Image 1 (cartoon, rainbow, N blue to C red):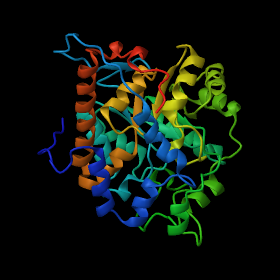
Image 2 (cartoon, helix red, strand yellow):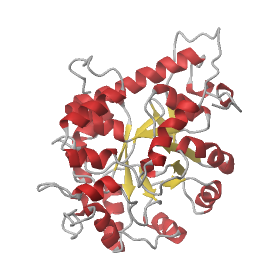
Image 3 (cartoon, one colour):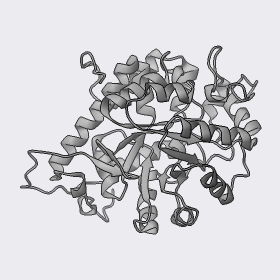
Length: 369
């Protein structure tokens, strides 16, 4: 198992990693990672909503021993944390997704690989020592999509995460201004040989927005969820759910779970923060499928709050990228370690020796701030 060489006291919290990434990354690449859609209202709200939630801890509970483990889709996890899909890790570090999967493996965490990874899914699987999920965008050419699904299944990925909130790419104005594109030598490696690997420079616009408009399928419907279920044995989670009625439809179409997500504030601006949308989705599904959440998680207390409100686990995206940019594999490793330590401390201080003890009564209700 990989180990970090020495804790870097320069990095006390996840914000420190973001600031290091800002200073070390190419400005166009950093702008791509950090940006949200349009006025970035939802981007800011994802974080602010967690800050508004107040905890009501229990006292005089024996918390001398804590058990952080949980179960998602029948899979035991060392804590309720999963690495979210994020594109183009080689913009942060030359080792790219290989560094990420090594860091995930060092902690026994599940990594979700993006369709738009800069490393082939088979190479990531070969380097993995913990479970992998595969995130899918559906292409207009369905044979491209079928091939991706079959390759992921053959390589041992354990679940398929279908992104459902991206018929077109949200207008990310930082990317428009900087004409975001992949630099020479980087590509969407999983699409090589399919004519869909290049994210090229487009004058006056985002190259990624042009790529999505040209190649990915905006006609995606619930029938396509049925089609995906017919071509794979992997359980399917739908990522990008914000409404209870959509979560119920996911059940009707055989989804194993949903991920409450607004794409990190990068799609439709002014949609709610994910932690604000979570209770409605949890209430709608009534425990029939598992509910996960991403967006805005930066502290161990955030994980505690999400679990208390009904999430089985949280996914983190940008913090891992900041870790990679700050210090490659070691940086990603330390990001995970910091979150684990903070979550462990939050459990102890809230009077929760196990994840099962993280219950809704820990959340203070009807408080105006």
